[in-house]
Length: 229
Image (cartoon, rainbow, N blue to C red; front, side):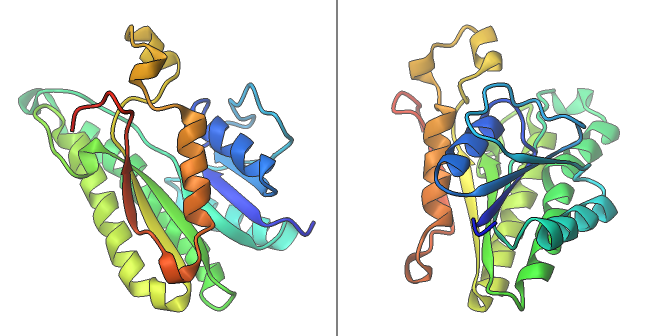
């Protein structure tokens, strides 16, 4: 195939699904990664390729990225969408939960970035987009574990952008400031107009990965017009 390859790490049924649909519709050969053998992506408009992978396991990540490069094509964009969430008073939280969120929200991104950068450093570069959150820039009460893991992800993104930008590798961090529309938001009694629409978010990320290197964005925050900030 001559299509550029885009990999979605953490391809879930909300933003992951939207990313797969938008990128496939704009000419990318999309590869989704998740721990599931079969991706939870009901509603795909176009065919994609799926690889089972635990992104917190560095050996699995390197194996899968190398397999994609050798058997599907050169990866031109990687979007890291894996994440987990916790809300608990600090004194009721525990070290196990703290470490779990760091592994899912930050360590997985480390493994993925290291794997793709190793392929790109002598091979025309590429773009990494890390999906952040409000907690990446603001640690609210009772979100200590979540915020610390997202702050760590943001710091790593900044460091990688400064180290590898001159090598032709574009590193971006997108702050999702608000609630994404989907089954969780609906269960909370929210309305679509109060939420970020996954397709619109995916379109913004498409713009980021297509930017000319003379006008790269490192960080942007996106939110619905009703969101206070």
